[in-house]
Image (cartoon, rainbow, N blue to C red):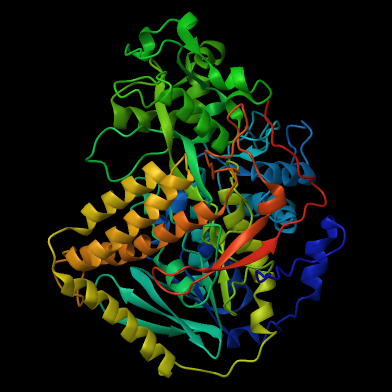
Length: 639
């Protein structure tokens, strides 16, 4: 019998659940909040908003940033916008419609209660950010403007040109630094979390390494909030910043936090294609570009002409042809698979044939260059700087790339993991997006978790449980620090012949070829064996120069790679286990005659949460069954 997990989701009418749940949670007297210490790991949108909010409420907060400033968090890379159900364009949007689109977009693999809460607080997020001075785009009359994103037939996406993530982060950063100036929040930059500290079954602190000095530091608290983002860099090439990693979450997993749905990884359809082996990351072009850009390939197989030389009659606008209801604004997983099918069939453009066109010719002719430039100017500049081509004159070339991870540490309705006192926010948890994230929902979830959910639910730990006061002199801190030191020293002591960069590239190739957009049982089984062998090669032949007692970027990368190698094997195992196709998880054995994802709701309508049992050993499966009372299970169609 597979153990079942308790999500702690409230019952009753879905529109009342969050309000009633908040009322039922214990409270902490404002005068008592200064007695409690909260540790926030990560300072992107989820971490900065949580730290700022908890500091404002009166808690003592310690916030840890892996970069030199919270302003460098990867949240700035989210360009296109943030969803909210304001219905300003008066085109039929509502909280319920945003809820419906998100559940459907996630291919019915997300909790209804969580998704409705996300839609419900979305409007509050916009009000909060406007009050902070976030410069959202506005219409001529001064009202906030909206645009469309994939998976929706209404305009609900608020945006700040192509810099939405950056502007939202600056708003959260301003609020965070205000609390730093009051002394309620302490900010620690250039620290990397290396261990979670558990005392008497509860998360009570962390051990970090100062990446400038190499020193290890201990911090104790009454709760730990993990806001460290996703694990897309397990593929080596992704749209993630190079500093983005899975180590903090993976170390928590090895300490007892279940990891849910690791195979649910999003492939974004609008990325600048790979141009050579020298690349260390990929550059995302915002999904917002699909509002005005038309996606096409050549009708002729193997056509190597420049896209600008291919006449209209020889172009196939395949998304508009296959999905007339949504056209170029189908969800990301649908658009990505369609691009792969066209390129695999020989219809791709460019020298490699591994690209499709995103063409603004018709939009420029219709609206004028000035209008397009006002909407997307900085994105067009970025594309030209990288490719040397002017997208005002020639079509952009794009291809799918690894982007966001819907899987993550399992959390209940309070955002608490299976380790009491360890809360997980934003992309680091699994909770809201199911098997595919709709565009403009990442910013929404990160800010919802930080500004509105965790300030209410953290009291489940703070006021709801007894904890003995501890200091960093507790034996558990010494043990955690010793383990972190030993792991890094073990890496340094290998003194092999291969760089961690070389091994990471090899891992990325295995992951992309066999655990990427298309997966099958044979490839996944082979991937597990190949990753296991690569992990052994790492521990026998990696070479990391230097020592651990000073700045050592090579050691940082190698330590993160060691975690990625374990996570990758686990990822492939989960993908092999899930014998269905849904959202970003596409098993080639399970597809409709039209090539669409074929879910198996009778067998897999559940969250797969895995309990760590040792490196290379089978993890233990725990299930959280998913029920759909409001958005009934149905074949997802965007035609």
